[in-house]
Image 1: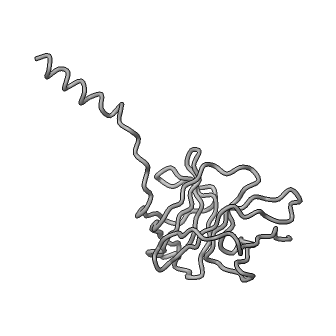
Image 2 (image 1 turned 180 degrees about the horizontal axis):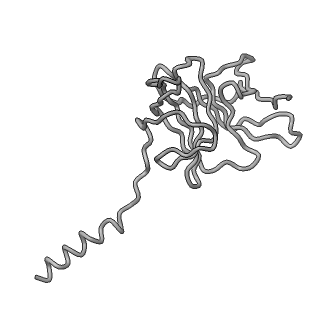
Image 3 (image 1 turned 90 degrees about the horizontal axis):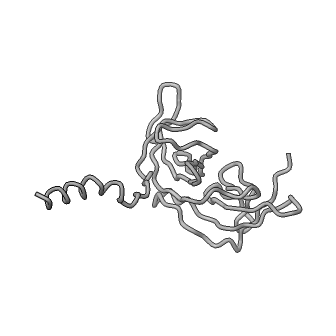
Length: 163
């Protein structure tokens, strides 16, 4: 009887001691949202933009103390033209520092090998002179493989856009 009671208590207590699972957003589907809105899964939209293949986009979301970049594919559009998206790949980060940002899509001021590319995503830090960025990390949003691929920052230069 004591053994059954111990086993029952262990089974009931197991979820309390279970290691939290990392949330996997790959495959998640959602309707298009605007800046600042929160999806049903609790992630908040911080920005987004289309890639050179306009069936794909990169979106920045946050949840708690994590920032995420989602490589997404348009799967459908409703009668008003609002897209439905499916997440194909995810990059996770601790919340960026105040002088750091992600540069991608049409909002990017970055050149790779001297040329504009809508398919690169850059994590950059605004320089002290506030005229340029220090490129910290970079990825190619590969729509054929539907994956982010880390790339060298050597030939990437980003400048602050003049308004």
